[in-house]
Length: 147
Image 1 (spheres, rainbow, N blue to C red):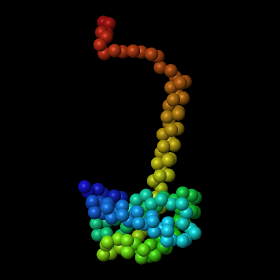
Image 2 (cartoon, one colour):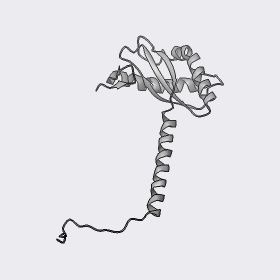
Image 3 (cartoon, rainbow, N blue to C red):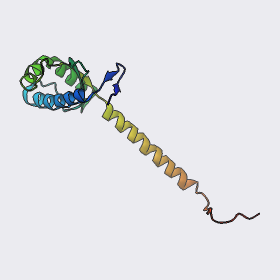
């Protein structure tokens, strides 16, 4: 299967997907256990994209908190990327450990906004239907129309 992600048209293969998932698990463990930066808030690694050459990895991080806390967490993770890569080396069977690019992932926030908007639309629709009842008109396809 080949998919294209984002604007850069990164090809996703079985191998890159597997490496991304492995990196996601290992990064989460290393960051939680080894990185002792107080700027790192409550985070979740949502996705890791790896191109076919396996030289880089875009790590998407969702952070619970204010914009300042999000920014501080992503900055702290970016500054710790060398330390994290050093800890990845003994855990991965790869010749080269990818360069890590941490990015703020706001997709969950965006999904919540969409969900909230849909609930509002549904409530408005129900209120409109209650204030403008439709007459009960039954039409059965089997019944004959009078002529």
